[in-house]
Image 1 (tube, helix red, strand yellow):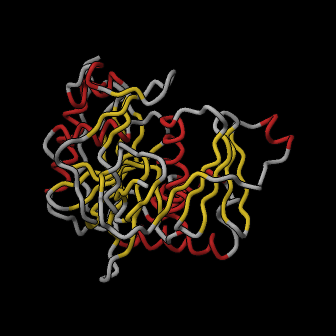
Image 2: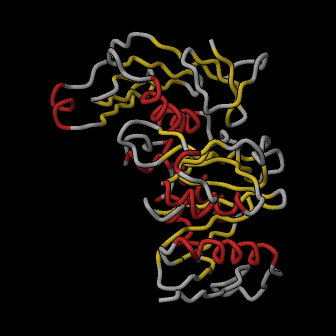
Length: 323
């Protein structure tokens, strides 16, 4: 077994996970093993869907037609039952994404499909629709000397004082090559291929990785616009944005029903009541990333407003495009 740490958990894995930090001697909170699963998806699901999943008393089951079967149970165990001949690096994609996110949810975390960085000892989180640049924005700030906390899967927990904190994930970005060049100056030769035909690349982080939970300062909801603008959302729109960007919301009501759905809604509402959620729109032009990063840094150091307006605690600024 291989011993790692991620999200403040000790992980004992039968599969080598080079993306994670090694952590010999740390008690295992989570076990990842390879075994046969008696569960099987229905035949019509196999024929019609690339991904199929079911929530059962024994755990949450997943089936990818090109990978095999998986089970996540009790927030302590992930079982892999791969198809013969599947590459390990392909198995690591869902393992360190969807499966780990579900496990963190089972452990009571509020899990966001997001990226997080630390600035002056506080965490900020970027959420948004696909292709809106969550990882790119986080990498840009990392390139300006700040710390990476987590990319793709961001887990929030509540500390002993009742404050939301961001758990440290593992030291890697997933970036498109052009985004890696614009945000970090990396050439294609410095990036690692995640899988054959997979356009994004892995960008390991060798320094400035936050290894302890950090208090959450702000959440930024990313969007596209002709100019860069930043303003705080009202409570209703903030709540809707957090729910929409929850990792579990990707599975509809299957993973969020009954008492679980109530608890999830309560988590999202509590987050919005304690943390500023701001809408950050920017042009798609990658050369403007540094200006947008500067806007975020300025916002974090600006005095808080007490006006109670829609831009409370958020400095509004625009950056014009060059054409």
